[in-house]
Image (cartoon, rainbow over all chains, first blue to last red; front, top):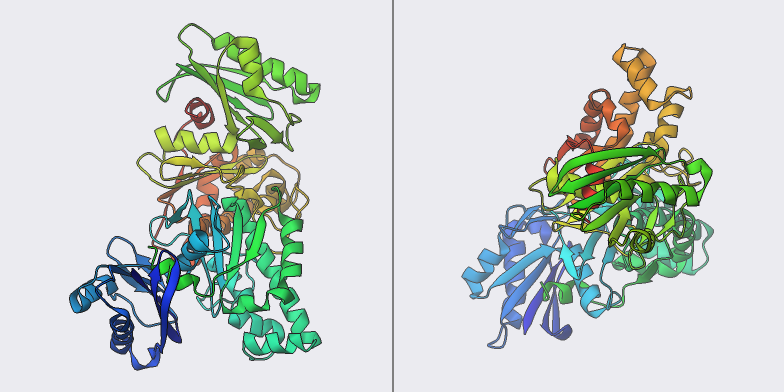
Amino acid sequence: MIIGVDLGGTFIKAGLVDNGRILRKIAKPTEAEKGKQRVIRNVLDCIAELQSDKVESVGIGSPGQIDHTKGVVLNSSNLQISNVNFPGIILQELNLPAKIDNDANCFALGEFLHGAGEGARNMVGITMGTGIGSGVIIDCRLYTGRNAAAELGHTVIKHNGEMCACGRKGHLEAYTGTRGIQKLFGKKLSPEDIFKLAAKRNKNALKTWDSVGNYLGVGIANAIHTYDPDVVVIGGSVAKAWRFFSKSMMKTVNELSLLPKTKIVKASLADAGVIGAASL
Amino acid sequence: MIIGVDLGGTFIKAGLVDNGRILRKIAKPTEAEKGKQRVIRNVLDCIAELQSDKVESVGIGSPGQIDHTKGVVLNSSNLQISNVNFPGIILQELNLPAKIDNDANCFALGEFLHGAGEGARNMVGITMGTGIGSGVIIDCRLYTGRNAAAELGHTVIKHNGEMCACGRKGHLEAYTGTRGIQKLFGKKLSPEDIFKLAAKRNKNALKTWDSVGNYLGVGIANAIHTYDPDVVVIGGSVAKAWRFFSKSMMKTVNELSLLPKTKIVKASLADAGVIGAASL
């Protein structure tokens, strides 16, 4: 059995995973505001809680760019855990071997192996949350390039367009990440609240999701033109609004794509990140 | 020895290739305006002229999308050769086994194996001509996705921007393909002529290449954020203007890229397409 950890900005989710199935699951606040050492402590506590003789190893999905040779988090704008060597710390403190990858990569791997991407050879996974994360499977394996392939959130879809959290303009994330959605809505409500308003047929909320789908469609069409994948899987907390943005998303993809129709589906696992981390 | 054929819109170039070196090279007008049968005839004539007992097989680089399972050109907007099965025809007429791939893929493969991409593991190749072609090498092999991966020319860099030849808006090709360059220049001169004017320090021409570099930089930054390659290689006839567009291109890439600096270089082979076709 393997312990999978999904290190999020708000919660750490960890699961005892056996061949893609979560046998036991726990969650703890990340407490990012209390600093790097506290975050490390909380991750270790989660793992220790699930540890037993049957656990062989640990996989961690972390925000930010990962140095795959060193197993170190290079930087993460949402979580101050730069230069943390989780595999080294886990081995030292808990005597368990550990692997680490980007959280969106873990999401993609989880969905590919046990979720909506099953059976594909090449797959693009996109997570919608505070930011737009993505991971890509090529020839049935996670593709990472030198280190950080598939940063689709930071591809330009509108040259000189809206400002992204990273400080560059026109990125996909600037239109479809939480801040982008708030800007489209015109008020600083959470995507969750804008979703609830849409469910009540609020016109501005419905129009906002329609626009989000349109911009997301541009990004997906670009991903199709770069990877020509068998399937694109969309997940993350904001994908909950699927029924409000998927129509305009599909329309835009169909308008922009020159290639044969590509399958675009909603993620099917509740904890793809945990399962993917355990599958690293 | 292998015969490599680069089927272009104006010329067919063919070479007798031995381990990446061209021993003999010929060129014939494509005569696309005389129809599909004439183009096929001209390709066969080129191959026949180079054929000998020492030739084992043929590789063809063709414009358009290729159906890799059937070896058929699906469609090509610049050349009317839809549904032509070159491998089948070459086997029947000349008794030689043949392979086919997209011309930009052949360019990328040639530069990867014997040119500016040598030693890389992952590489993006971009050809600048009438259109913007591209090919990508992943894990030392051409990556084609389902069929047509790396259509970077048709990725959106400016949502709702300039019209592309394909009928969609805001594509990289709409700013950096021949038509795009002409639009930026404001007159229907050939890129070659705009290059010559720049060499004479014509201000509008210099400004045009500066803009081309800027837009190309957006496309390259996107390619870096999707593939995180070891190197990006730029070729094609329009790359001749490298010294006029490379500065703004590099500047834009550096501004937009979140990743460690990526090598971006000019193609080093005169006939990467022929050599790559022979290496399929």
